[in-house]
Amino acid sequence: MQKIILSFFGIINIFFISAQNLVVNPGAQSFPRGTGWTILSAGGSVCGPLPTKTYLNWTMIPDGDVTLYPWDHTIGAAGGITFFSGCSVANRGPFELLQDIDVSADAASIDLGIIQYTFGGYIQTPVNNVTGGQTDQGRFIVDYLDVANVIIGSSYTTNWQSYRNGLAAGWSLSALTGWNLYTDTRLAPIGTRKVRIRMQTQVFTNTPAINVYFDDISLVKAIILPVKLVSFTGNENAGKIYLNWKVADELNLSHYQLQQSTDGINFTGIATIASGKKEYSFIDKNTSIYIDKYYYRLKMTDVDGKFSYSNILPIKIKEQQSMTISPNPATNLVTISGFKKQGKITIINSNGSSVYNANTDAQAMKINISLLPPGLYVVRFTDGKAVSYKKLLIQN
Image 1 (cartoon, rainbow, N blue to C red):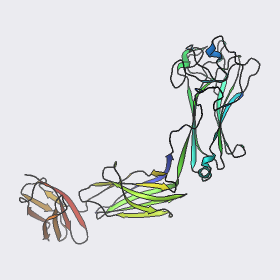
Image 2: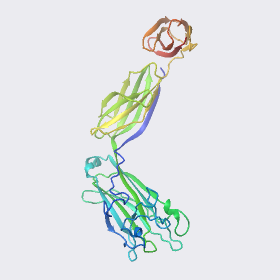
Image 3: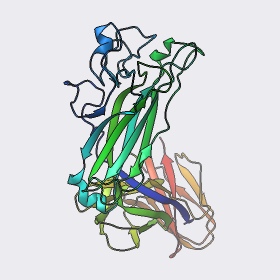
């Protein structure tokens, strides 16, 4: 049969533990104000006459005056709460709020270099230095700390944000839509035991209000499965499917499960192969003459039971010879042609039973099928070495 080869290269497998946010009080929603966070410094508490504008340092409930104060990022309306560093007449900052997230429970995996973190957070600076406005600044810093609280590796530090979305001058309704997302994904440096998230603000031109706001801070953990799949290839020959895969950097990997499917959706395990090599192979002999295409994937499992899947590899079954059946569908007689060597013809029903057998040394032959029940059949021809299949539909 014709040889078909398909492959996928350079597949790196990532297993996301969950969407659980490791940050405590990520949107300033929990009280008292220090819940989950440490206030290193903040502006004064008096910013304006309304209680919601002077609620507490580092927390603020927008009061609906969206020309001055932003709506909560999540609910998109007045009544939510945002991080806000207060007001300051004398001190220009920077002011800072931080949270240390203990990740020491994952020390073993971190030190194997297989855990990464994704940080996310929103900043809004709704006014600029036009017609008496302000260009106050805000930024995020994410540090990775060792057991001695020393920063290791490179920190993620955003640029100072000091702009707004909206009109070109003065205060504006940009507070409704001016949230800007900052995000960073990186492998935790070996030795990481804490991740520190810092929010900083500073007065740039005017006082007292520090018009920088933060909301919806997140840190999500993912594990990089300890194997890199370099290639996953397959080919079909004479009804058998030959599968091969190459890997690199097996770390703490337990085994591979090779899975097969006929629709690319529902998979069944057909073999389990222990880890410990760089190259693997398997021959799938459990194929059907009625199936035109098979799909394969690898389930890769580490010793802790965590797993990931490879991409899906399709293998199409191709006919080798130009055997033809005419007519098809047929009722009484069919002509089978295209033979180049003498051999044997077999007609097989849907139960896998042979219902007709004959030897031939001609290039074509006619067969009376009038006594066979209607249904789908497969015509098989072999010359003793190669095998060809062709579907035949018999009708009333």
